[in-house]
Structures are given as C-alpha cells and as structure tokens.
Length: 402
Image (cartoon, rainbow, N blue to C red):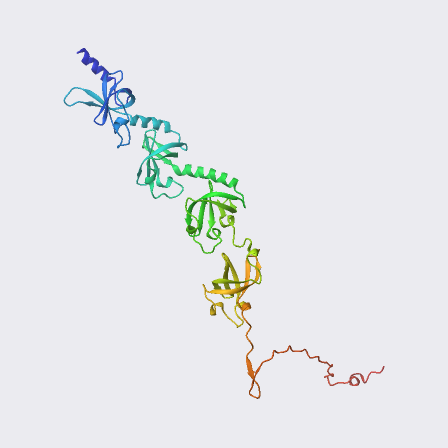
C-alpha cells in the first residue's frame, strides 16, 4: 500500500503541459521509452513527436541512457495493466521555445532548412518550428522548380510571427535582393569604362549574352560578340564560360553595363595596310547587294564596296542586274581607309573600255564617230538698242529756252 501511495503521489507530480527531464530506457518499435526524472513515472516518445522528418530512423536520433528535456502531452493508462505512462514530445517543446524566441523578431534574418516543397512555396524549419516561404518570396526571379531547394539551408528574413495562429512567414527574396544590391554597389565601384574585366557567361538571348561580373550582369550585344557579321550568341560563347570583356558604358542608376568581347580580340582591320593597298588586283566574293553597289569580301572580315558606277563601263541601274550574292569576282583596289574601315573597289577598271559604236555616212559607208570636240564659247558684241520711246530730245525740250 505504501508503494502504491508513493506511485500515485509521483503521478500527481506530472501534469500535461509540464516540461520535464527524462532518461531514455530503451529504443524499439519506432519509439523511445523514458523514465521521468524524480518521479519513477514512464514516458513514451514517438518518432512523430521527435522530428518532422518521417523518414528518419529513431535509432539515429536518441540512444539508451541519454537524458532529454521533453514536454508532457497527456496521460495514458494501460488497458490490461494498471500502469500509467505519459506521452511526451521533444519536437513541440523545441517549437514552444522557438516561438518564444521569435516574438518581436520580425525583420531579423535567420538560418532555415527546407523540409519540402508544398503548393505555393516552401516549408522550412527553424529550431524545431515549421515556417513557410511563399513562392513569390523565394527569389527575386520567378522560380518554377521549387523542388531543388529541398534539403538546402539558407538565410531568410522573418516577415510575420503569430504563435496563436501558428503562423510563421519568411522571405528569402529580401535577403537575396539585399545581398545583390550590396554586391552590385561594390561591383559598380570597381568598373571603369574602357577597362578589361573577367566575367562568367550567365545566360544567352537572341540579342546577346549576359556576363556576371561579381554582383552585376553586363550585356554583350550580338554586334559586340565577334568581328564577323550575323553571328548567333550560342555560336560564340557558352553558359558558364569565363570571358575577358571590355567595358563600353556604365549606367549605375539603371543597373546596366555594356560590354564588348570583340574589342578584346584582334580585328580584321588591324594592320590592313600591310595586307591591302591601292592598285592590288584580288579575288573576292560578293556578300551583299544594295541599290548603290556591291560589297565584296576581299579579306576575312573585310568587305569592300564596288560602287554601281565601278561595276561596268555600260550603264547599270542596279547591281543585281549583273551580279549575284556568292559570285566570285576579280576586283581592283582603288582606296584603303583603315581608320574609316572602308575599301573602295572596281570591276570595270580591269575591263577594256569598249569602242564607240560606228555610224553610217552619206555615202553609205560606216565611219567611226569622232569624239565630240568641246564647244567653244562664241564671242558676241552687244550694242545698246536704240531708244524705243518714239520721242526725240527736241520733241521733249523744244519749248525750253536755255
């Protein structure tokens, strides 16, 4: 009777909601059996009340002989025996402590671990407390595949805390944007127009390639990728590739940096005077036709212009009448202007001027027409015309005495 009374008294010392210390007796059947210190009363700690990870092995989390601090949930009386045990929770105790730590901490940055991707965002854990990051607050850019974050740990800013509503909202985007802004400011402070910098190709578009410069992305427009014309970005660079680029322009307010890849490599016009000179006769290929002439590639990356007046001795309205794209032609270099990146060419300069057409004389014989002599300017003598009024001086002043 005395032992039974002692047992009842010890049980009365344990109540739901109490925080107690307990020693692990055994671990089996997916649960840990405990003895609550100072009472002699047993407790049961299930895997569900130990962790949120349902795939975890309880044997990896607790060991026999280990002492734990747990929260008493409720009393459980055995069906076939008079034994009294209590269901306890380590997870809920940690959550309560976490809630207490969160009160008034809105705006602070904490480290969280992503437990799973859920509809509309990510479920995260902070010191045993489950939190939620909405999809719009995961990153500064829209994230389609949220599964890739599962298992990751990162910093997030506390946006809203309500223990009563079990509401814990965080934002990773705020941290990303603040970090990016600081890195952008530092990056802009180091960039100078005309400098050569090293970056990594971040992404490709139809109009160019974006290069990450340690906090800011710069754009290499498609026209600045190569000295060749009409190239596609993917034919010049690949994502992840490190490249040396020249800074062309900086707009810190708009967050834009213009870059050039071709400015860091030798161009086709470098040293062109040693490769090409006026008077040279070379082979070339017609690259494009316009109304005013034809552009012929005379060296790799160098197109010269054959003006429409230099195509033939005959009158030509449009170059396409006698030339076509891809046609091989022989041309004579008329002028090379490396500074203006211009080469003037001629096709007709390599052709013999045709003789003038013959014309028939009065006797019926054909005679070659002579070049027309320049017309001489005839000298003419001009005389003042006679007065046409029909009156003489005497008629006008005959009555006046002098």
